[in-house]
Image 1: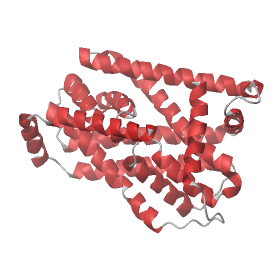
Image 2 (image 1 turned 180 degrees about the vertical axis):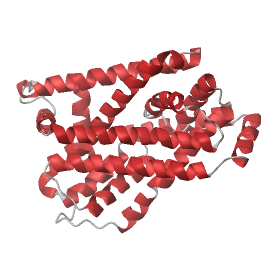
Image 3 (image 1 turned 120 degrees about the vertical axis):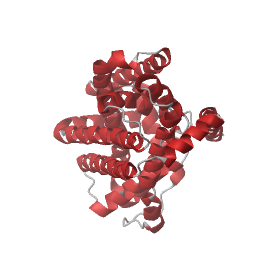
Image 4 (image 1 turned 90 degrees about the vertical axis):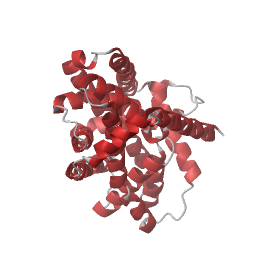
Length: 342
């Protein structure tokens, strides 16, 4: 029931925000004009940019799995990754792709259940750490630029609050796991064993710090390539925003649109870009909204191969049945365990 209510809430927010940004007939006319004069060669470059995102993110996952002693062939790993990317875009909530990816991963590696699940969760953590690093750098360099108007300043403060919570959570997690504080919890503490597993995974990745650093670097590449994908959409629509200014705006959009209050960030993405690009870079509101929608369309195109892979995918492992409901609970427990430390 809770998941159904959350899904309905996300859909309601998505529809409401889309109506908010698209209901003006004059604005829609301006959008039509922008699309008629668009340079679609930039869309092709945007697709190439997001392919780089997928390659970097898949490589990161490969590195994290390898640390856990899980070795899959290139084609198996790529197939699982693409399936996860597809479901992340088309399932309500932010972890649908992780659940499906983990479900099939366990069919391949039934003897390493904990390592497989933890690699999926740490894939998210490393991505978050890289985004925090990029965001901190860009805000430090372009704070005055980002805080020029009241509306952009409000969005910037929302970002700063989320950034502060993320940094505090990451540091707290490292301290707790570093001093093995989970082991001192009462034996009957809910989720104690899972928390200890998470702690052990932290230590494993800390011991393999070179691999962890490589995964972090791949995350940085993936985030910057995502920014470049959005920039290509902007250039396609004639918004020639300087690269540094555009990249400074992107962490605000990426962070706020990732909040689980709309379906796949639809609507929030357009509204944030409308405020930021119009207020800071002089981009017409209609064009700024279209940049968000066109970027999302590019991402969808790049994720569609995951549907084809899913249709033809056949696990090579010996496990013939893994309960998806139990898998969902395992992912939820692990993520809840991490959030408890934040």
